[in-house]
Length: 174
Figure 1 (cartoon, rainbow, N blue to C red):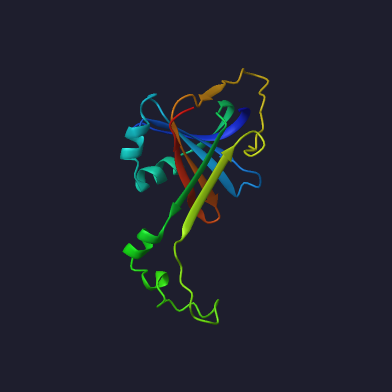
Figure 2 (cartoon, rainbow, N blue to C red):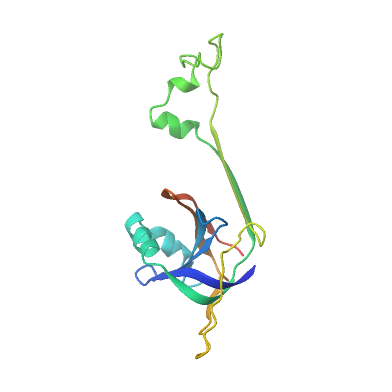
């Protein structure tokens, strides 16, 4: 995928990572790409990224004009059972006939066997639309900023109202 335009960008020298935000249509959500400086730097980024460092990076992003973005298409699908996690958190009766599910079953002989979480993310030209505008200054030649996503990276899908990270993932093979 190739796009040219204005994007919010940032950099964290402590994490050795550059960030670029691709807004989705309506600007209520966006994808943020976290691209390590080093081609082999994804593991270090995953190990050292903390919530405060991520908030500082996202808060320090600024609009950069004339960005030349090259980004691979990808599709991720993940499914996982949450029964063990929920039971470890103390949600135990839900998975036995002690569960009070009378609101959805009149007979009372109902319990959950598992809770399945499924996530699906696909990025392509149609699914990731960026709000882009190019400003041309007549008195100087604009500096084009290249952002080539050509090695393993992390991504975030963020909501802006309220501010929250909805999905976070890593792409290890392009």
